[in-house]
Amino acid sequence: MATYRNSFGYFVLPVMVLALLTLQAEGQGLKVGFYEKSCPHAEKIVTTVISEVMAVAPSLSGPLLRMHFHDCFIRGCDGSVLLDSPTNQSEKFSPPNLSLRGFNIIDRVKLALENACPGVVSCADIIALVARDVTVATKGPFWEVETGRRDGNVSLFSDPINPTTGLPPFFANINLLKQSFALRGLNTKDLVVLSGGHTIGMSHCSSFDSRLYNFTGKGDTDPSMDPNYIARLKLKCKQGDQTTLAELDPGSFKTFDDSYYRLLTKRRGLLQSDAALLNDPETRAYLVQSTSHGSTFFKDFGVSMVKMGRIGVLTGSQGEVRKVCSKRN
Image 1 (spheres, rainbow, N blue to C red):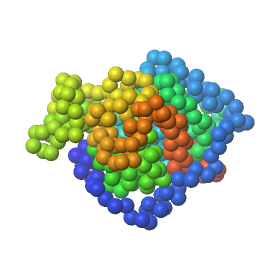
Image 2 (tube, helix red, strand yellow; image 1 turned 135 degrees about the horizontal axis):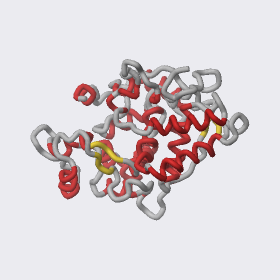
Image 3 (cartoon, one colour; image 1 turned 90 degrees about the horizontal axis):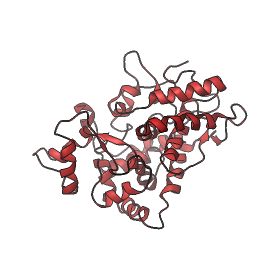
Image 4 (spheres, helix red, strand yellow; image 1 turned 90 degrees about the vertical axis):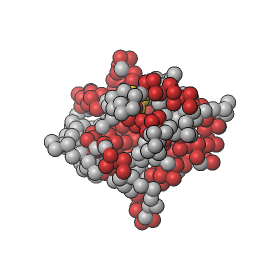
């Protein structure tokens, strides 16, 4: 894990890489209702399964929403995060993805769709539809999901931890976050809006342990964090705790709402990447706007999720439609 943490620096992305990856974000070939004729009840099947799951395991809403983010940010929204590997060398086993949960739920949805329409609905589309449905199930916004993605067959352990193109780490500062999103054709507004997904879900104590106990290596706490919040977190998370989970949005972590932003303005963001949103004029202004009567957060979230869902997609004759999401055909 130490290698993963240290592999991220504060860098300037090569212009060529930035331009190349941004061009992949167009999402050509996707459309709302792609399965209207080939599998007319596809979206209803997904919604039914997710409703059943949320009734008994609402804590999976956050991880299933996050799975879409982790999939799209690496090689585009191609379902590559789902692939298994006999030697544990696929994305699923890379350090940033070890905290993902709900793979069995994706399998459950896929099985239901295969029974109805064999070989039609891609695993990449399932991830996108599930992300929308868990958001709605937790009282969040509904948006029309563009479908038509195909599944990729390349999944590498090294990709999520690549220093320049990997997943933005939980300790990222605002510059690193903005660069990571820009690399995928997403702007600063998309960054702060999609971060709002942290209104549901939890995080391991190990992801913010240093903020409580050893922020600069001198046994100190993070001065940007509310001291009262630190005191409460220390009661839950002892130093070195690798297993305990803490709520990203204490008090309403099972409800999709704007309280995540309210907590940030009170210096109660759990992760450094959350707190970083206070360190940029545009993101900070959105925090204030999103907690006012004129909040556009729900609408904005749907717009940014559609935009994210277009990153690097495979369509048409590209890729494949996997029969089992964890295995290449």
